[in-house]
Amino acid sequence: MKKLMLATAALAVVFAGSAQAQSRDTIQIAGSSTVLPFASIVAEEFGNAFPQFKTPVVGSGGTGGGLKQFCEGVGANTIDIANASRQIKKSEVEACNKNGVNKILEVQIGYDGIVFASSASKADFALEPVHVFKAIAAQVAVDGKLVANPYKNWNEIDAALPNQPIALAIPASNHGTREVFQERVIAAGAKAAGLPEMSKEEMEKVVTTFRQDVVVEIAGDYTETLARLQSNADTVGVFGLSFYDQNKDKLKVATVSGVTPSLETVAAGEYPVSRPLFFYVKGEHVGVVPGIDEYVEFFLSDGIAGLGGTLETAGLIPAPAEETADVLAEYKAGKALTAADVK
Image 1 (spheres, rainbow, N blue to C red):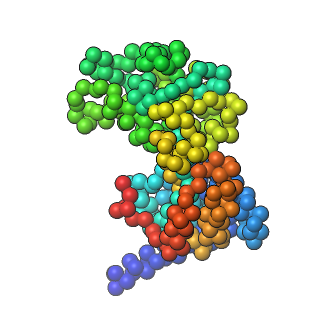
Image 2: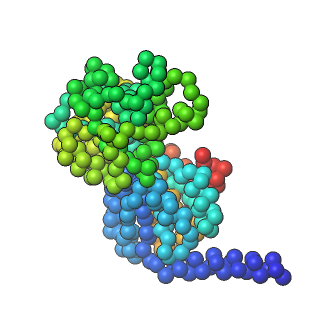
Image 3: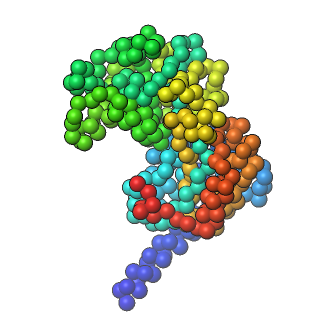
């Protein structure tokens, strides 16, 4: 009898959440500032193409912030979709599961590059990951010893770099861009920086502790990073490729490891700092909040996310058609992520 009462109570919670979600007739989306412009375009196009559904509401907040909202539970006061510029983490899946969000449906929409850009009026940068590490790390190796970072100008790190004060605007920890930047640039740069032998814990501290004198962490979206560059022309900012493409009149992009970031070099796998983009659908809300399935299928359609589609024009790098077809097939099959599927 006790087990029956507990099971009945659990079902009541699920049904209550579904009933709450059913009281809402507009898809609610939040998350990555990189995915934001793409999702906003799709939401508007979706509203025009499907007049029987209300236009989805799209907000930002960063990948981490969006997934935190997504995992708060099931019901009308929680979002339906979280945009992400990285894959969901194991800890986030576990947080979702703890709050009753068990049907996490992953949708990969395409690719983007992470670029270093400066004011269009400033000198050209040809960067390597090790240059960025030596500019940003609180401690670096000098004569084989770990010391407080002494570098003031870029050309002190490498004579081929501009004689320009070091100033960096990077995404804060709420952004998925930060994690890709950390892994593909800073960690990679540290390996080439001639650091002395140290424990794994000590290395982690060196790689994640940044200078306070020349580094600004941006919690807002890329427009805030752009504003920082406009207020201090020496600043080098970290952006998504799509944002840079939309602001080429104001910005100059750096090469990384000799490769200029572009739709072509990212799609070909030549540019070293690129990543897949995602959104996550709360399966418990599908069929309850109207239009979610239709939104997903519309987003992944050839005319929107495909080669030559609306989003490529806006800066998204399309995934191969067969890859997108597999993503849609898995979504339609209701294949939910578990903590074992991710890191």
